[in-house]
Image (tube, rainbow, N blue to C red):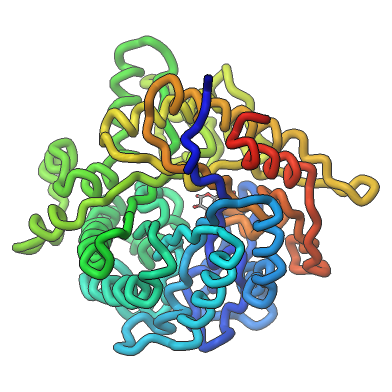
Length: 478
Ligand code: BG6
């Protein structure tokens, strides 16, 4: 019988900046996302120098969870969620990032949210930094180019761990720490690291330099967290888009193998506590100067993670002799030899729909790290239409159903240790890559459009009742 463990964490996932709103409420400072305008599929979001008057910034109000958290959490409870993955807005707690004392109003807000979740029997799963470093740290310190920012992050982590030690058990340090490997798209280094690459700089070298400081920050935070509460489970969080070889041509297979290092480099360090040889060879070959200080080896060794959290949306494919990069996709872009996979259909935003890929990555990650895994994002971004006051999101249900089947096989047939599943954007939120509202993932619809119009009213989609039944039957009734 294909049964998931009885304590399997069924939930939903969100990120502070994409749904909270209240961007300057309760003493919150601006974050790197607060200067990002709206874009669209194929149209990049602009990063503005200041907050420009008259420019629309979709994350400023987002879906106003800040003022509606009780109503929203009641809906999550009605759906039967056992956990909710969300993040703490770093600049709510440290508005500039370099203060010595935290902002009490910000801390209180998360106390209120966590209490409300716990009251409804929903376990909070918390990412410390989900793309939202205080803007001041990016502007004045150069973000994670600067080692001091690792210390600021450690202080932020310590404050959160201490304050919420009896309310939150499961943590992750940085969201999708590895997505900035795609240095072609400035969005990723900006939101992950508060970094803009200057003309004349080698973007990969900058990425590894700032990445080193983030790995140090993550390890320092893990060690601090364990000292505060030894029961904490602190994980890595990576974006996991597997890269397939286009054919059985040995060069395609080798290229896919090498390309996968883009996905593995960060978790390799976070899980093992040291740099992998392929990276050291790359630094040597390319002449990259990585700011590794005496004692860093110890820090990395003492701050390894307990589990691997990851997002999975799609797979991608490489061909050693590809002449045209036709992936046309900014999330898995940056692959010089990326090509379309002829066996896989894509969403309207060009994201390949590949449930077997989920079982494949669960196996690859588990074999590599022998650590518990947690699927903390997975979902289908699509346009929803209201017909007779209802939203029949059959394509979303189909996507989720096939992915749940795949994860169930990985657990029940392959023996993968999987902690839980939190589909992305359980309620409609602002898209990260495009800033749009119309790219919807939620099982709860929010009346808000790309330009910020709408009543913000919430409405259940067909997927709401479907997922409720999935949870109630522990994944048996799909
Ligand atoms: C992940 C991020 O990359 O993908 C989320 O962790 C993001 O923040 C999600 O929202 C889906 O991407 P998008 O661009 O469709 O919102």
